[in-house]
Amino acid sequence: MGFIIWLIVGGIIGWVASMIMKTDAQQGALMNIVVGIVGAVLGGWLGGMLLGDGGSINSGDFSLSGLLMSLLGAVVLLAIVNMFRRGRVR
Image 1 (spheres, rainbow, N blue to C red):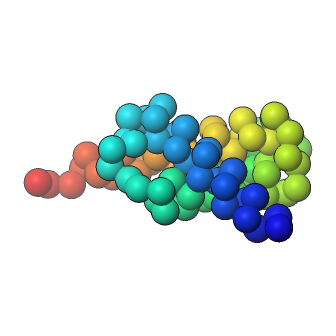
Image 2 (image 1 turned 90 degrees about the vertical axis):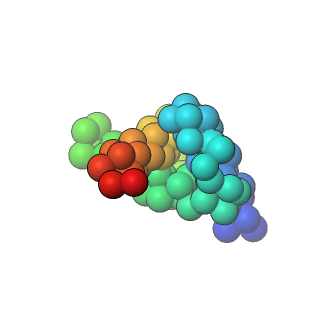
């Protein structure tokens, strides 16, 4: 059951991050889930480095601060991806 909730929350976090970064039209539901889950890992890692205890949804911290750290990680991930996309020659 936890895996299904992880997918749903990851999808929602990825969707919100894509709306913040204005990349929502470029990615589908599967990509939102991937961005949300990888963003949660990144947010937990960044929070651990910056705050000492960066609780994220991946570490079982299903709280508002954990969700915000996961969202921050997803936004950072999309910013990095956008930076590499702009560098590509069209």
